[in-house]
Image 1 (cartoon, rainbow, N blue to C red):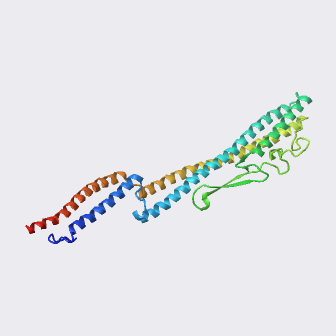
Image 2 (image 1 turned 120 degrees about the vertical axis):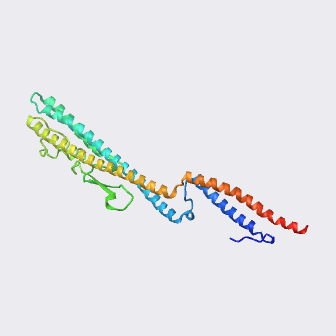
Image 3 (image 1 turned 90 degrees about the horizontal axis):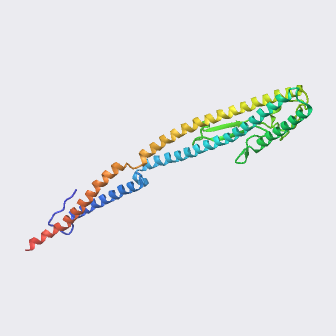
Length: 294
């Protein structure tokens, strides 16, 4: 650092140096104030180019994970819709079983069995309506073939970040009025695809076996959906933890430390005041030369 000769007044080096350092202090003071105002340590790439690049990548990853969390929530909602329909079908099947057990008793007369048949026909049609109406965002969840759905459950292209769910078909592919839950009834004399015949104990017994098989089928499907939901819950918890960790890593790089910035601000404010005082003194110093002309 150069110090000027006090007897040379054309160039006041002391004043220039005081002015230079005052400018630096003002610039640094502005930077600290900006960090306190925005809460960010890095507001421009020039503040920390490496940190800016790393923080930007972490932010992109975090935003991808946030959307993946939403995807998992949507997937669970879709499976909940399917589960709700199967639960409704399970309730109907249990009602049907009660009626078939009733029809398998010879205390029932022809008119009573006809009434039970009519009720079973309506319940079977309702199963078909439920299956037809079970959709999520316009996508049928129960169709004539298996429905395979793929959910993006993380932000990368790794195979494990794409979760596949298969909802097995229930329709038999020939009749939309009922689901393929009663396939074990092969004889049209008991069930022709839309209506039941329970005119004898033997027919009612065969129908009972079919409905019990249907109940087991629906229970198995519910269990499979429950397994998918449980896996999605684990993925949700794991992803939420990972996202929090990435947020912490980004914060350490990009967020301002308010205690440190406030400490620096206090120091710079004092330096600004002393810098102004030093500049004033440096500007006044050459006036001493006038005493040589007394």
